[in-house]
Image 1 (cartoon, helix red, strand yellow):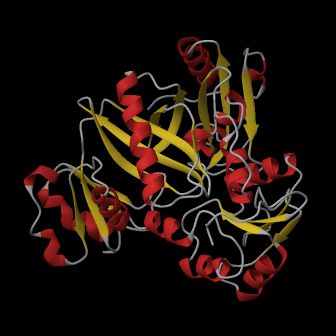
Image 2 (cartoon, rainbow, N blue to C red):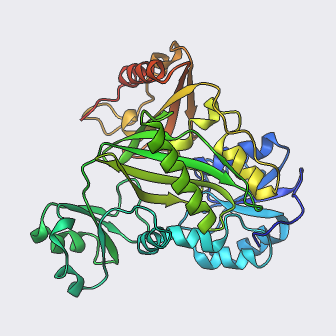
Length: 388
């Protein structure tokens, strides 16, 4: 059910599959517009579940929870792409689900994702699918060095293995448990960028400023908006993302990541939900990516995505809660950030800090991106984030 229907108006109950920080900001955006939200998440302490009007503490494929969600919610969305397909399909037969089960499924498996991008005629880096031992012996030299990525369930550097040369491919596949995977050539990167957009059921779109992204240990570290890239390249990225959204008949907020290599753009990954690199929109844009998610889900007109200032977002990972050599977490020195002009700190309400876990972020706003970046990097260093 993704076609045009009558708008869902407040104070209707909305459903959210997933209780992480993306779900938390959806709940907040929905509350701001007067909606109520039921969150389905098995974690009793999930960030979204703790602030939702109702929290169904159950597995994502629990029949009773699915029935209750369908029976009490006017529309349902998701905050992550690994919701069981059967759950989305069951809900879609009873209540509007946006994005659709088919659109989410296209992003759940790297094999399908790559094939979809290629069918659209969009630029995609050299790669090969690994599904059986026979596939290991028929790989072109151009894929080495490369990165082997599990076809499903990998994120933030998980489910990946470096493959420096042909001799390492067998051990790399073994390390992933010999699950279906995609070997991607390691491109010489100029930078990475992402596009966050919203699309409604009638095909209307709203695109946020392109963000430039820096990663550390395979996890997003810093996002810069607008990206410091040529205007033509930024427009090319927007055009590619819009074609992907149209090809999926997408309804909701969509994130598309790109590699830039030797001046050329390549589609890397799609995220059928708000994206970490779009967190800057919470503070820097007239409508956030989460506000757009609520609007698209409910059939409301999309909001204005234009920025009010340049922004730089810095991720705060669980590593920050641990002093060097200590296994006991302690609260970071938040006073180190308190005096920075234009800095907005947002913590996700997660109860336990772990290395690599996304615990929060801060965004620095300024009239120009250079000033925002300098202040953000200085604040990043003061709070204790060090480059490896």
